[in-house]
Amino acid sequence: MEEFLYHVDTQNNVLGKIERKKAHKDKILHRAGVVLVFNTKGEICLTKRSPEKGIFGNCFDTACSFHVSYGETFDEAAKRELFEETKLKTELVSLGTFLLDEDPDHMIVATYTTIANDEIILDPTEATNGKYYSIEDADKIINNEKITAWLRDAWKIYKNKQLEN
Image (tube, rainbow, N blue to C red; front, side, top):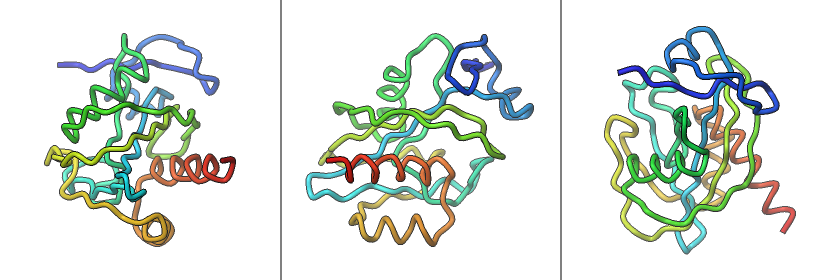
C-alpha cells in the first residue's frame, strides 16, 4: 500500500502530496518529526535503529521518529507514531520545527518532548534497544557515536530551549 506524505517547500508550505518512496528517491522535501522521551529523573531515552532500516540503520536515534502522512497534522502523527513505536500515550510539548535538507533526508522536522515513566515497548522493526541516559551521557553519544541527522538537530533545539529557560 502506498503511503503519501506532504510535499512542502522550505517554509513548510504545502505544495501537494507525494508518495513516500518517490520523496526519498527524488530528494523531495516532506514533513517528519521526532519525540524526545524523558523520564522524571531528567534522563532521555535513546534507541538504536534496527539494522534493517534503509536509512541510518544501527545508529542512535530518538525514541520515536516519524513521517507525517498526508491528511494528518504534525501533532496527530506524533501521537500515533509514539504509540506505535513505544506503546506510550503521553502529553507532548512542541519545541518547534527545523529544516533537514541534506542527503539522505529532506524534511521539515517537528520536534516534541514528553515525560514518561511507563515501560517503553519498542517496535523491533524500528529499534533494537532503548535505554535512558543522563543528559551528559546523551551529549557524549550524540557527539561521538553514529546517530541520525534528525537526532543531532533535535538535540540542538532541545539544548537551546534549555538555555532559554
